[in-house]
Image (cartoon, rainbow over all chains, first blue to last red; front, side):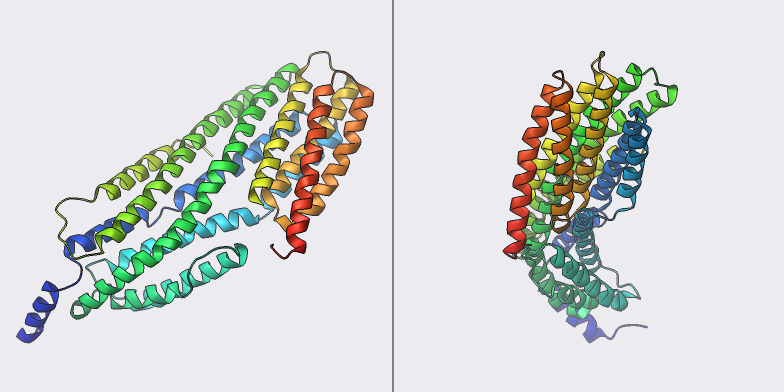
Length: 297
Length: 113
């Protein structure tokens, strides 16, 4: 059906004075596109660290000469595997919150209006709010503002409707600086874990893989399977260490890119070239993607 | 709080390595090996607890491991002079574990966690 001429004229007038230009919206979209599944990488590192811990535990058990101690060690490994720990929950929540934020940003900055966008609006809003409330019950010191989900839900429901582009742009301008606190808080969690706990564990796993293997050699128990295990452990430890450093760099760069995004949307401007900070962040993600394929656990 | 937990984890990891090195010594006796295996098992349990448990759950778990380690340290001292470095590491760890229990207990009683 043809749009009446006055609707087209109104759209043109409103479009021309919209508070964000197409290039600014594209920058928001590019940032969101890059960070929409960012949780894959830190989640993978935690999963592999757990696998290394378990593998090391089994190999350590095989070095014990006392059968009672050996069996107890295996039972401890089983307990470790089944226990759902609070540290991982807090970290996983941090990643999921960043994912949700990026995915909602992707929707609101998209130039296509999908059919189910209204139902997505309510799901996204409720989803991110419930994740934040679970997170707050674990981390009581966090300073994440309330009602974040409602703001996102409102924004998504506006998305794509041409006649309210100005309102949409204004809401984006409000949301991104508000999300800055959220992003810094969530990424700092990951940074703390990777800089301190993961470093200590990786060093320990590497040392232990070596001494366990030497212990098996000393006891004349080392088989080709032990050689393969040792090789696999050392290789994975190497790539996890690489991924750990890359994630730490990405965390810093995602914060820089988001800061830049806040600055960009501050005033209406036509961006002449791709935003450097977002390109750096995109490169970081590419590197992590490549490293993750080298992990065998 | 997190810093104390990480420092303790680092010390536990160092103790595991110290025990592993001691086990590699060629002329170790069966009695010494068995003692070191017991210590190794307890240290790994401690490592698991520090990774897995929340602060509230940690106090009991750490106290239990600290008691076991204290008994094993005395046995090591009595059994062999060769294992002095292990018993020294364990004594150092015992002090750190005590400090962590105090910090967590104080935080719990003050309503901080």
